[in-house]
Image (cartoon, rainbow, N blue to C red; front, side, top):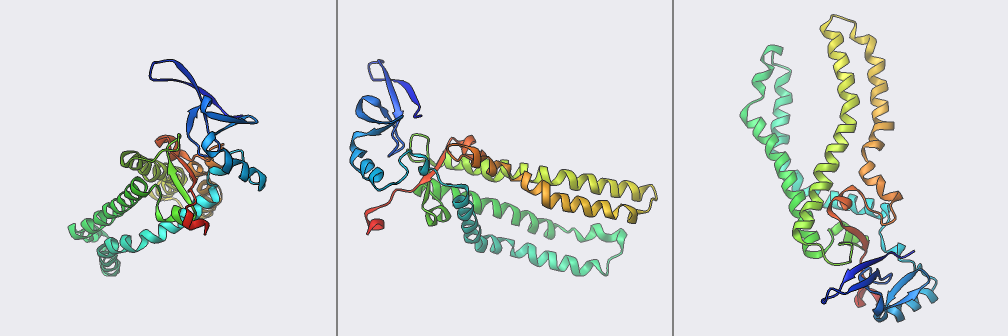
Length: 269
């Protein structure tokens, strides 16, 4: 059933509003036409009726992009960002190669000397560069075009709950929730079992125990991470499956929606 909310007009008179199933915008129901439990704006009524006659889903639920299409967009964006990310990682890759070559000829007590300022700087530069590329790409694309290249490829766009465009500030907030909050949850869920297993390994070694005896446990932990904890770490994305508006965690934080992009006249021809 379409949700009806109360708003105020310019003279502060209460006005009932509802979401148009054709455009997704919240409008006064006085300017709309009822369709079952839903409402459609009068200017969209002809196109809406044509959609119904063609047998398309007129409930408005098809507006929200499925998790499968969003996952495909995520993969596309990953490969698009791969080239610039690889460039900023190049100094770190070179430093890491030299680091691994020196390990074989370095005594255990001198290992700390391999962590030079150049190596640390290359590592920090790679991580900061990765965050900058991701944040600028997603903030600018979503704020300027309403979608990243990946979302454009699958015919999706990011909008506000009323169907309006997303501001640059809102796009930045969405990226923070997506990359940092989701990332923190991801590594927290995966890191806990690994940290416990590693701690048990170090504790056993420190007490002079037989570390080979806990190797089976380590293997089971790795299997559990892959089979159980990895899927659990993705729950910020899985939550969109059961949500009526297909919202993942970062959509909830930023109050955004991912919907089907409007088809232009060029796209129809």
